[in-house]
Length: 318
Image (cartoon, rainbow, N blue to C red; front, side):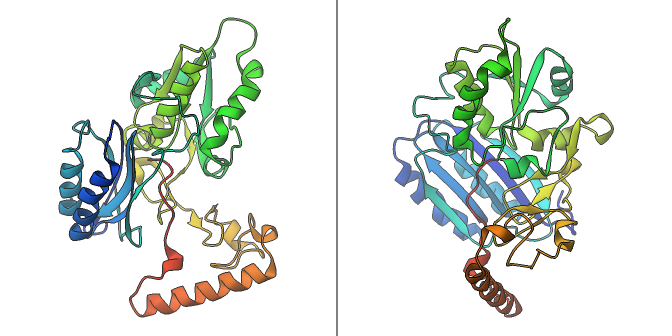
C-alpha cells in the first residue's frame, strides 16, 4: 500500500541471464522507462541486467512487467522500498561489459554459485565459530554498517576483491580443513560473483545471504538482528535501516562518500564542496569548482529544475 508520506517506490533489481542482443534490450527498456516517468539506472550486459529505478507504484509495476518478459527474467529478483521523493535525477539505460564489475571473465554465476541462505537462517550461520564471514562491499560502505564480526577487506572497488582474497587466502583458511565462508553484500549481486569466484578457487562450503542486506533488514526484526549500523544505498537516500526506513547519513557531493552527523559538524565539511574524508584529497582549485557547481545546483533547485552536477552515479549493487 502506498504511504502518503512515502509515495515513491524504489525497486532494486538484478538477474543473471543470457542476452544475445543488448542493444535490443536497451531499445526496449529506455523509451518505456521514460514514458512511465521512472528515474534511476539500468545496466545491461551479455550476462544480464542490474539496476535501481524509482517512480510511482504503477510506473514501477509497468517496467518490472516488461523486464520479466526478457529472456530468463521471469523470476527477476526485486527488492522494493519507499521514499518521500524521487532519489534519482534522471533515467539511464546503459550497456556494459558486466552488470557488476569483477574483472574475472571466466566467472559465470549461471554455471556455479555458492549456497543461498535465507535471512531467517543467516544469524545461525554467521554465529557458528566455524564460519568466516566476509563483507564483499567497498570500504566506505562497510564504514556505514556491517554484521558484527565480519571481515572488512578494505577494498576500494569490487574489482579489488579477487586480488584481496588470493593475497589473504592462507591467513583466512589456515592449514586444516577449509572453514565455511559466508559472504554478503547490499542486494546479493556481488555475492553471486564472489561465491562463484571462491568456488573456482577450490572452495565448496561457500554461502551467501539471499536478497542481501536489504532483504535481511526488511524481514528480520531489530530485536533479533545482528546488523550494526545502517546500509549504504546508491541513491540520494544514502543509507537505510531496519524496515528499510531512511537512515541518518548524508552524501558528500564532492566525493560521493557517506557522511555521519558528526562529519557534518567538522570544520572540514562544506556543503557540496568537501567533507573530512576528501578535504585533503582535493586542491583549492578543485574546491572552487565544486563551490561554483553547488551554487548552480541551488539556483536550479530554486527554479524547480535539476542540475547535471547533482546526478548520482550508476548502480554498483542492489
